[in-house]
Image 1: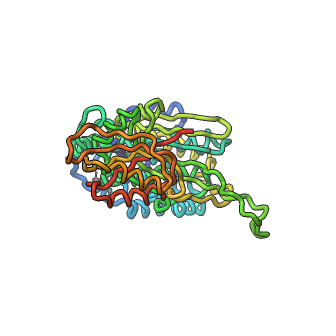
Image 2: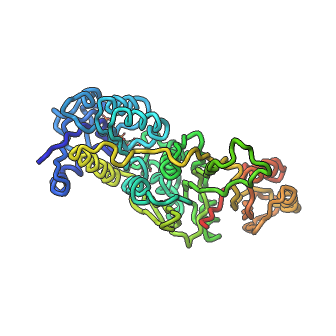
Amino acid sequence: MQQVNLGLVGGGTVGGGVVNALQRNGALMASRLGVELRVVKVAVRDLKKARLATLSSRLLTTDWRQVVNDPAVQVVVELMGGTTIAKEVVLAALRLGKSVVTANKALLSAHGEELFAEAARSGANLYYEASVAGGIPIIKVLRESLVGNRVLHLAGIVNGTCNYILTRMKLEGADFADVLAEAQRLGYAEAEPSLDIDGHDAAHKVGILASLAHGFWVKPEQIHTEGIRHLSKLDLQFAAQLGYTIKLLGIVKSLPEPLPAKTKSPVTAGRRKSARVQVSVYPALVPNGHVLASVNYAFNAISVRGDVVGDTLFYGRGAGSEATASSVLSDLADAALDLKHGSIRRVPDFVAHDGQGQVCPLAEVVSRYYVRLMVLDQPGVFARIATLLARAKIGISSIIQPEGHAGETVPVILMIHDAPNLAMQRVLAQIAKLPDVKSKPVMIRVEAFD
Ligand code: NAP
Ligand code: HSE
């Protein structure tokens, strides 16, 4: 049987999972593909470290170049993380015309265009199923299964660590720091966990999904990104009382074209208007009736609305050794079949299409809001807050204030009607300055899935 030789750069959580899964299911894959996948070299940092997978010491090296340059290695599997050395690894392998598989969303998000350009120049294939949503095959869905659709709306829970933390805070009243430590122990969190909890990891993934859906590469700095650090158990409890669950969401949404200008420039007349797309990551109140509200722990889910297919939903484990390994195996199967049949870029890794789209600043996006204020419980407070909101033409849909004692600081929850993000930020800055308001207002968007 034909054999394809793999060189791994990284033998940690994901790399170890891949080696174990190949040991378990390698023969099954070989019988399905007609190709045997064999790990012939693995680069790690520390040769003495205890590992998830049993690796013969003769396969190990601390020099990634020995993996990439080994003439026996046909597919380089980058599972080390980071964006500096990992970029060198991927570029070096592509320049040698080798197939590359990566799970590195930070790398793709920041340098995707350059890496795809190098792959095209070298006639090499670059695969990245494991970079988004762990074991969910969402890259294949967007690149292949839904290729005949325009993506109108995509909403997803794409960070397992944050979803794990929010679920345990809500269901068990657990403390943020304790649950984060547990997520790290379970292999969900990034080496630098602030990437998870400050929303950057989700932004990397959402940028990749938005790019595939809309045909222009969306860079991390174009994505409005908020994390979950500022959320308290109080917010999760109030949201629950109101019939919502707080989730860190990635949103990719086609927005209506702006109103046409009165006179058309002869230069732009006849050109297709560029698509305006909201691409953002923020914690949001999800109505309990919506399926995303019941996606718990390290599970991820992505709902995708196509103009032909309608609504679809993809669900599964979004982080961890085995779930991620499953997606790497899928890429390895594609790489092996492409090598077997000599197909170069049969399914192109990324193709710009439909002209230049643009990311719409979140300031222009309209939504509803949950606002928690900590205020002094004394007469006139509501009137002062309501006056500022009324002046900004922003309507309150409901108010909750748990019973307190006069003179105490108490939480007040305002549910706010549709308003543009910029107007909302401005009025909250004014509210924060009122003498009765005792801490920075917490604002969480209420997501509409219409
Ligand atoms: P990890 O457990 O920290 O493993 C990283 C591996 O890379 C380790 O084996 C490390 O060696 C090796 N390494 C680091 N720097 C190296 C260098 N300069 N030369 C040679 N080897 C080096 O990380 P991970 O969780 O497996 O994540 C790997 C990648 O997959 C990241 O891009 C991550 O974002 C992505 N990913 C992770 C998950 C997940 O659930 N964990 C899911 C999807 C995608 P030592 O073992 O000797 O330290
Ligand atoms: N740290 C990531 C997460 C790993 O928690 O989702 C999977 O990409």
